[in-house]
Amino acid sequence: MKRFLSIALLLTLFLAACAPSTPVATQPPARHTLTVFAAASLTDAFGEMGKNFEAANPGVAVTFNFAGSQSLRTQIEQGAPVDVFASASGKEMDALVASQFAADGTSQIFLTNKLVVILPANNPAGLQTLEDLAKSGVKLVLAAEEVPVGNYARQALDKMNGSFGADFKDKVLANVVSNEDNVKQVVAKVQLGEADAGIVYTSDAIAAPDLKSIEIPADLNVIARYPIAALTKSENADLAAAFIAYVLSPEGQAILAKWGFGPIQ
Amino acid sequence: MQISRLSFSMSRLKKTANQLFTDGRLNWVFIIPSAILLALFWIPFLALLLRSFNSEFFQLALSEQALKALRLSLFTSTITTIATVIFGTPLAYMLAHWRIRFKSWVELLIDLPIVLPPSVAGLTLLIAFGRNGLFGPLLGLFGVTLPFTTAAVVIAQTFVASPLYIRSARVGFAEIDKQLEEAALVEGANQWQLFAHVMLPLAGRALVSGAILTWTRALGEFGATILFAGNLEGVTQTMPMAIYLGFERNLGIALALSVVLVFVSILLLTLTKRLEKRE
Image (cartoon, rainbow over all chains, first blue to last red; front, top):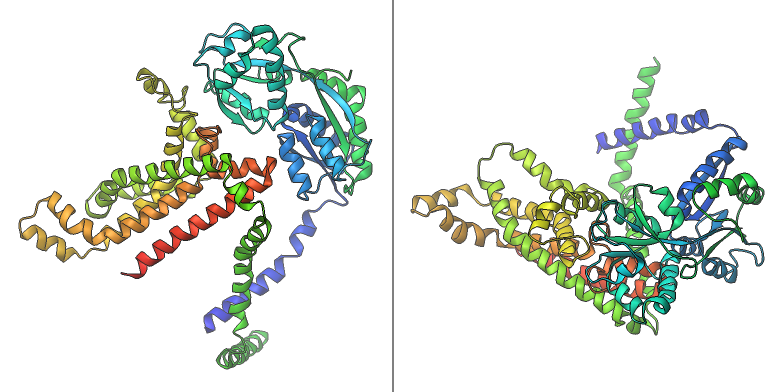
């Protein structure tokens, strides 16, 4: 017991002696952190914009959380401290407006995106056309129906029913081997060659140049419109507004175009 | 002079502290930290029960998606446990009773999956047994592709959960009195008889409690499974996965499934406690 006490005392003294001094010594003055929750498909483009924004605003650090928009929406609803939300679908933004995490009428569409079929470079299933997706035995990976891109993919399959026969969608969905939680996981499974095909955004195909792709013609494609908004509980309203302005500026739009996103229509 | 004064005050401090402990007045030094940690364990379960028990609970817990996930979880974790006992018992026996070169390295490799993040486990399984993995082409020759199958779920669970059984069984075998072993050998028992008639019955309890631990862990496996086996209702979507995905879609299902999983785990843990006590 004596030894325990003296050790405890020494430990307390030690902690008391070093605890306050270290953080004070390393902390630069008045640093602001802007927290941005963004759809997984924005990973590369927003990563680049974040660096530029930090360079243009000394003392500001931008932290990103990239995931499926439906994941991010849930995290925000559960009280995650967020300044800006960029969603891959209007549905998630509308839900946040309804629950008053975002003010009505403040969200703005900042880009468009469309779908493409991606294949591993060696194309193990020998897919040539969209219709080949319905061939039996094709291992297709989609995002889950609740993920924006998974929802868009199913909408596109609905449209394809009109061109390729009424049971086309059912046949394709029967080939699905996994419903992933965000678009980047679909890309990863195809990149690893575990899946024969995946349906993702054109921007993802551009970010992964080692993959083959099959274009989806405009009349069968679905246009995704991404909204962005500052959140009502943000404590960095000015910074949040500045970041959104940067995303909408010609420079921000040029970066988005570089990563394969379409302009605001 | 200063040092002597410090040591003087230290000894006085110790004396008073001793006094206080004998009085029982310092017992809070033990009670308060314990209470804080226990609160950390228990408050989340309390919150879970309060949030999930409502009129919709049974409807959600018995929904088709929930039942499919429950069925798949029970099926895969049972297969995992059976496979672990079949392959793990000989291994644990060897580790406990044989002289093996580099034994500590073998043991370290077995313990590794226990401490590794499951995401690392899933990634390594994918690059080892995936279609383009190290052994994927070899498996492909036999027409076997593992990722996205129920078999992949079992492999992921076995990778993560079987070390718990092997550990428990190894200790169970090692604790058996050396004299018993020698007596059996003097009586003319061969290695197999020694194992089957002496060692196995004596280590029985350790084996069963180890198997239950493995079963519980397999039931909760998530990270390795989602990477290696993917997510498809009825094929690879186990309960933990349905809970994780339900969190974003239907919080009610996630909560109901969590409650089911908590109760199954409590049941299994009580069973292991019982087995340990009877010794």
